[in-house]
Image (cartoon, rainbow, N blue to C red):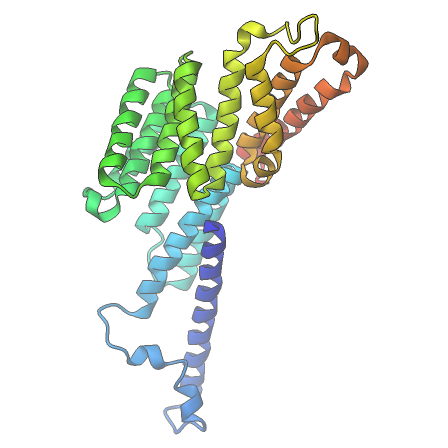
Length: 339
């Protein structure tokens, strides 16, 4: 939905620029003489008659920069950091070609830092991710009254970089402090859900899946309540990974002699992934889909009896092949070409 709003604005902005340019050309051709249809030609120029502190082009540049930053964030989440870099390159070219505003707009600068942060996390470069998070913090407003979500997002990016560096305690401290801040400010439910999801990933990486479970469940509940489909899809995958981590002691004993499943957590993971497969394929990015297919392969192996594997070995191989295809696409989007 965010991407659609951004695209709609860019189309309107492009048509407005073309319309103003065409009307200016026609005024120059008239040479200052009387126009044949004054009533009809006055309509495109009615906004010039309104007094205001800023020209229309400045307001348009502000909105266009914000829309392009939103598109870059969507490209990074769904197609990889290189796709975000390509979007930002086109954004800078658009501003330089129009000559309406500088290309280092704060929204575009923040989007560039966010794309650099995502690319560093994709490479596993914690130092570069921390540097990009510092840039995001510098670009965020100093006062929470201006844009609290931007400040929270900058701190969340730092916590994600700390998680990449393996500094779990620091990651939990930063994320928990920002989660308490969201509750204090109010109205930051999206940021709160993302922080809860980050805390779940941090506890899981630290080897505490039982603690991670409560944070993942909270993130899934918030996302489902507000219909934040992308966050909910990420929460479902995190829940599956947590349940699989809790079922590690049952791996190799998928069923007892009666045929009943002896791995309830893996069965929960498989049911969740199967039930939400359409949403995961349509809402999640390449990285999330690759994680989902890997979790599905693990859940299938953990819940399938040896007899069933001998009868139909392809049932366990299919998720692995699907994971490999997503992993190849993810690698290409991050390091070779944009998808």
